[in-house]
Image (spheres, rainbow, N blue to C red):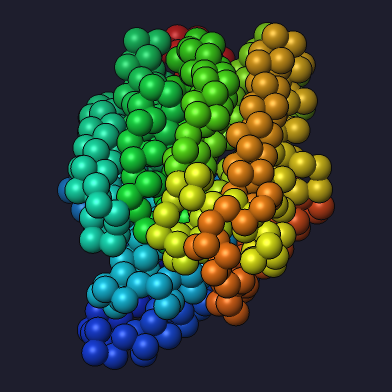
Length: 509
């Protein structure tokens, strides 16, 4: 029986074991090490197939559960499981890891073995975050992710990589300290680190408020939300192409996932009380950051700010649920908002990876990220230009692409809550189109700007594989989002049921 197989453990530990094996292979056999890394990443993706095909969409209960005592004296367990929220994120992580390895195949010539090993280890740790059902285990994976990304930016990054890595590490580490304090408090109160126990624990409003803000700091930095977003553009600008792709595609999603797993179910009354704050911060991210993106001259910085703006839609979709259910009694519309937020996370994963991948293609040829250094690229790289324009359209939210589905669902839910909020959120569609099309116009179209552009060569086979795979997923979700929405339906309904039941002491029926 497939449900009895340790598939989730394999998803976590196979990439990490692969990373060790790759390091042992060494730089002298760099070619063999790369092929080994690719085989391990393909095997990790293959493990997702039985997960998806045998996943029971009719229940919100955790599936493929593995549980073994870890630190028995503190009731800490090695406890893994997945539901409709974790499964799509596992698939996203596995696909992006493969594409990142292919993207850096010929480009990375300095310590290539360590480079691919870092990405494999990162994939295993990110999978660990999405499957952990013990809070302490989650925290270990959550912190562990920082290390490979720190190494990736610090060794293979740009000239200001030390500044960028330190800023990235300090911001995210400081945020997670507050989460750890919250988890310790919950353990002392309930004597359990199990997420299910924490989510069912009765808490006073004061306790919930402190916990909500402790989790908020940790996950807001990760997404990142305004005003703790400044580390992201710096990290993206200095990171190698593969680092930017993983950072945008998967690591930012850990913040949204944290809200779904911790903030909303553990402190629902406080989350309902401060939903207005989250909606306000989301709108600032959507609108203000959109204007900031318009002013950028560096392609990577522009896309980094675009990521922050698009992730504002995720937090908006999650927290309007409280207003819709509690004030409007519109649980179906609230479900639409949460589903939209989740679809937006997956869609943004593919679109942002594609945008950073496209910039990486240009950077590999000209070693410049400045928009002013380009112009007329379509004349020398027509195949690349076609992909770039397509991904730009997806970034704008063009119907038929994945970028449209999540944003449209969140917008529909937001209109039900408040027309004013919906109007402000809708500004992102205009601003997103403005900065994305402005980028495309200046880089892709027009006459050939200089002799360096005139010398550019079109996509090679390796780059074509990466671009076309990302285009396939962007189109697939855009035209047929139903499997993605269907797989999370039960989990969304269960979450809404949970968050609308008070946990205040003395008020439970």
